[in-house]
Image (cartoon, rainbow, N blue to C red; front, side, top):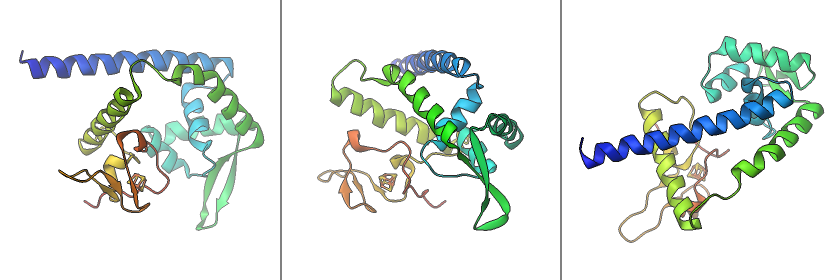
Length: 193
Ligand code: SF4
């Protein structure tokens, strides 16, 4: 095996291990609050205050629409989400958190916060890690593994760094150092095919 392939394998193994650890911790939090892991993801996604159609939630969470629909029905029965008519299309409904859902979102975010606290390495190390991981996410999206990706590296407004220029967001007219890259940006627009 070449050095490069060996490094790829180790990076993948490390990301997988991190993913398993985070999944186990999230499962603990979900179980404590008597919601499924997918239900927790729905609540976390809606915590940004932006109502969504069930189909949009399914795409963002990379699960089928019937699967997310079942999770939403359970959350609805618990009074954690509400369904409102979509003003843009009265045949559709939008899903949003109720006050109880907001409280649950805040509680789970607090419980998960220690896990997400600054890890090892310097700020510069972590900023580089962020850029590399966002690059991998963009690659997986291009390969069709990930459906929705609203990060800078997949955005039409992102201007990569040049030999003498820094990366920029052309929409917000601001420089984007690695540490400033957004993972889930409300202004994101996909790069046209
Ligand atoms: S609009 Fe958002 S996602 Fe796009 S480049 Fe600017 S900050 Fe990044």
